[in-house]
Image (cartoon, rainbow, N blue to C red):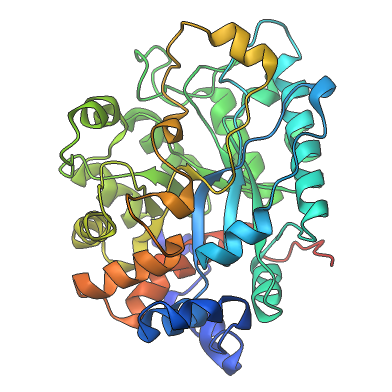
Length: 395
């Protein structure tokens, strides 16, 4: 994608985020932290739109289990200090045996998520204006995401159906290959030569509809080919530099294939993309901030975001999946089983997620403007480029 194709400007975009006093007012829904945390941190949390670009909310995927358990999503979001999350789920954790399984699970997952939002008096954000509206009114919001395009099963028309149901963020690949593959997954043996023809068609359709393309889980060949197809900047929502391995040998071994090289990260940034840094391989908020700094040092402050790959809400396991997985280790995927939720990411964490991250970023040397970009501004630029002009936001 040539730079001349980019119809957005970082300088103008950041002005729209901070201009006219829209987003610099102290947010009363998060002032509880002021009494227990550094006042500078609470002020920055209030002045910036904090977004987790990859957060799992577990829901039932079988129709017989709907609508699923009641979840205090809004409570967890208020505690976290985040203004929004890309609320995601995947349909391929359990084997997809029959045609239609992936699509049915996808529709059931969306139904369950809609019920969660309804019970929490929340709604989806469809574009930047929706997120700004929610922020101004002190209401946490979500961007609907799905991890893996397995639900398409080779049917491109389903992407339009998904869009009409609120999908605005699609991770092209996940751990297991789709029945009609879209590209090579970085943890599987390469067999498709990178991006497939169908994968390219899906990216083009996402660009046309207004859906962010997330290239997490793609190997280098797939990612590089995708960057030549897309007309909009892309997201790699959850990864880390392959030089930042941490001290946990088990996590180190499991996560190593999922990390991005400096060279590859630069390719993403040069095309206007943004890379989310996950909390895996960081045993403390300060180590996480250092991992973010390492990424910023490679690609620049305008191309880094937060993408935890954690869960704000409790895990959900269907009776069917528990029975199916007894005695079988789960491939990739559910790493959050090994730690707490987003607000309990680190041992002895006493404050909400975004508060402790902002505190750690300050201690690592980032200023308020830079934290605003990492915290959400960079992602919002990509989101705005993908979704501009589309909105069905309602309260």
